[in-house]
Image 1 (cartoon, rainbow, N blue to C red):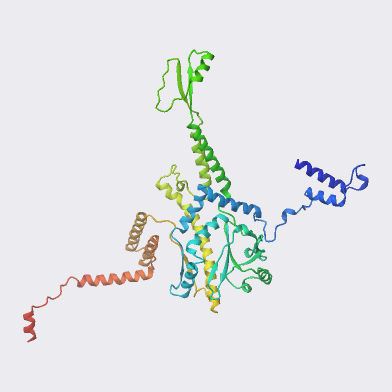
Image 2: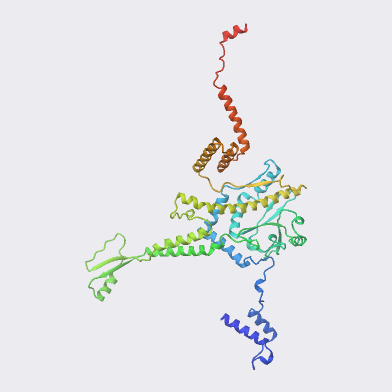
Length: 495
């Protein structure tokens, strides 16, 4: 029906464009106003290059705004309602943030450490709690928008904007990879807000005059903007669950169908056979018969047989298909099967090998969060320095983001590895093919598996000093000290 109307409207429009001599006789010609409405109804307002047009700030590689918002809403919905989707997000957060994360200034006694802790433990910021929420939302939405406000003393506090409210992200006209401004959709109570994207530096040193003028038009404050799963030529991020959302939803529907089939498998009927009975006798018996209660007694003669009949729905096929689809989703997220409780044919040895790709993906997520915290921390330090009239110096005001180890090493394996390295070093030094300093360096690298940091040069110097002291003790340590003389002899000697 819709196609028919479109063809009719298009035909009328084309007929109106024909010269009068070529028109069909007796046909009613539309007016100019009617032709315009017909063109709009037929979609004739779409130009041939309409697909090349984008909203201001939107790039060719960006998802359409409704598609992105739909993907973000679906990600949140699945995380709330689907245990599988919830686990896919929470297992990553557990590996990354279960033991927490901290800022550590290069000089622990400097003001930088105090400023960072003031920001982290501020009762409004409450980053001990809210950073986990930020990381979760970054995975669910694919992006974070955090307005930042600086007090006169430089103390920084951050707020949050729901990514679904982002209307567009403007990038530097000279550099498509650098966001410079955020536009927030207006609602019934607010106007369209425009935030400058925070870049740690001075605009006149980082951007052209054209870009500086563009950033000056974003007058509603400063905001952090972070994104993941994005392309350099795009402006927006994408949720972690976007690629597997449909699979998760269908997997959930399949499990519900299996549950219904399982309930049907539990159902049964009593099949009663009356041998040699006429139709009238069968009908009469059917009116009198009833299903026996559990534990009751049933009495009949040899002409009547009772059988419990259950359906044969081939339920054994469901487990294989469920595992196939589940592994497809887990593989798309880079997670091994045995992490979700499906051991399969995995043993301890193969499980250890299967963990490595997943841990590499976790390290990539950790690096993204590290960059996020470094950007925020550097902004905090710069605002403090700005309030006191000082300038930022990377060497003087440096800091690190400290994470716990993603995986706990096997102590037995690590000890065996260090022992093997030590034996190889001793053999190399004794055979004259390796220097002592190189040997200590290899041992320090092996000790680094346990998190120990050893300077090979200093360690070798200390080792030689202790060896020299032990050799002196071994030479003079065997000579007993002179015993003290008795008290009377000491007195006579004194006289």
